[in-house]
Length: 336
Ligand code: FE
Image 1: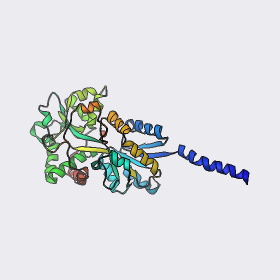
Image 2 (image 1 turned 90 degrees about the vertical axis):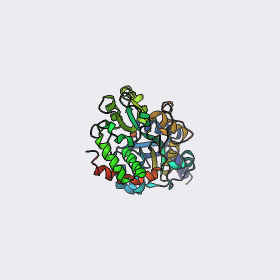
Image 3 (image 1 turned 180 degrees about the horizontal axis):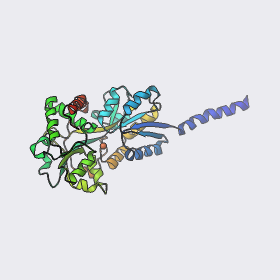
Image 4 (image 1 turned 135 degrees about the vertical axis):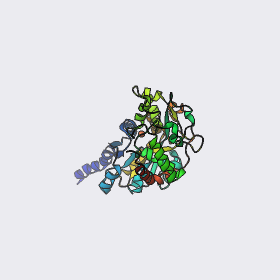
């Protein structure tokens, strides 16, 4: 008996240690490896918790629905608000009550029901040719439909989440009918069919295909830091639109805990880490985004673009119009 008890005790005491070293957390991510890997590597270094990540460009909501309660996903990282709300509305997330998150993330950047949390913000800016667009600093989204931009605008697909959010904000401010007219005129002013990504439009400005484009603010910094893309950024000014009235449209990247998260404690630890000074500084320096944690400053480069006025309409209000935004895009055949 005595001899048998000792190995049993050893096993009992060893097990929690062995288990701790095998701790892990699983992420489904719309955000890219260059940004997320360095942040999660630091988290693993500090906590010993292994982070497994599946990167995707689309379809995470569908994957979670398919997997149901057997899903290995603990957290979902998104690069825009639309997709964060999509998984929340589909019931694929769970509420997370946590002091650190509440301390690090201002109330307007987290869900009242605690299902989603913003991690960074960015503006949807206008990129304007330095040589060919005068008085660009006063431009508004509404100005893009003017005669002077006929055949001069480049933009990615209207249905990309970044543009859907902007269009939803136009609907929130101007109503459906006026936004439809805006979209129609914007389409008439396009230099080419919507295509490519935000940076591709700036390249097109550099090449003389068009004079202005819409894009997220952080891409300006990313292009400036990239040898090949720097000439594109050098050819444009970054314009924060609507500074004379409501301010520039803001979107967020964020995180939510999956409904059936199997590693809840580890997931919570990682969420808190993502909102911490260290991780927020990495978001700022690696991707030129605005940290959501008010204790952390934007990178020096981003700060050099100056302060700007942001649209104060809550994202939760804006996002209610996203179905109408898709409808209008279909009605005006924006991408065709
Ligand atoms: Fe992006």
